[in-house]
Structure formats: C-alpha cells, structure tokens
Image 1 (cartoon, rainbow, N blue to C red):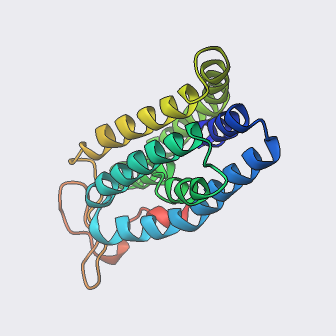
Image 2: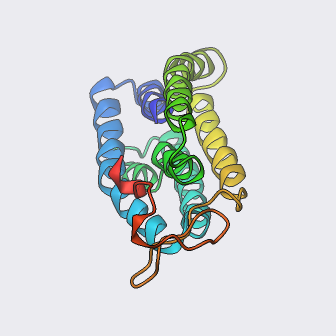
Length: 198
C-alpha cells in the first residue's frame, strides 16, 4: 500500500512534471482502496479468501499495467484517474486476511498475541523498506519501475498466500456454521474476527 501510493506520485511527477496532479491521482487511488477494501473483505468472509483474492489480484495487476501505460503516454490526467482508482480499489488488503487466519489457527492459545506481534513487526518493516525501495527504483532505474515492483510483489505475494488452502478460514456464508481451518464445525462460539473487522 505504501509502495503503491508513493510509486504513483513518483511516476506521474516524472512523466508530467506536475506534483499537484501526481498527488491527486494518488489520492484517487487511496480513496478507491478505502472504498473497495471493506467490500472485498465481506466477499472473503462469505465465499472464502482464495475465491476472492485470485480474481481480485488479477484485476489489480491488469489495471495497474493499464495505469502505468497511460502515465507513460501522458494521459494520467484523464483516463489515468479511472485506472488509478480501479487499481486502488482492487488492491488486496492482506493484513486483515492474515490476522483472520491467525485468529482461527491459534484461537484460545497464548501464541495468538505473539502471532499478532509478529504481524505488526512485519508490517512496520514493510512500511519502512517499501517506500525507500520504490524511491530508489523510480529515481535511479526508471519512473515506472517503483510502481511496477509494487505491483509484482503484491500479485506474487497474494497468489502465494491464496495457495495456502489448509490455513484458510471457512467461509461464513448465510446459514453456515463457522468452522476451523480443517473444516471442523465449531458453531457460533468459534473465535476469529471477520476480515472487515480489522
């Protein structure tokens, strides 16, 4: 998330020379993310993370490529806004998905807090290293390299995460009991927040 926003600013500023426009396009993508993330979380709760994440990240990757192409041909002021908003809206929100899995896998154990702490540390490291990497790539290699790297890392990581089927919480569709990662029904008392709750 931090890499994508900064990569957007650096790309638009490099191709147009307008930081105001760069900030506007990045803001549109952030608004798209804020609107889209809760909707995808609800879908993941209902249908399962794997079934939602794979098409979601495919659309994210495709719209990001379209957005970078439009920026390169200097059309970010028009169609680029829409492509940036769609890319932001379909960017997977992985943190809540991971925490939902920890909540089911380690429910009722003292290791749950340790897992959440590990997740927080990983998030902080990514938010420190990610922007520095994007800035280096966009300024020293190529303007679109930072945003492209963010997209590749997001798509790769999401697909690898979605492939972990054994740890995926069971969907919480209407009328279904909540079950553990191996399908054992636990009824309404099963712990673990839905993805949208984080």
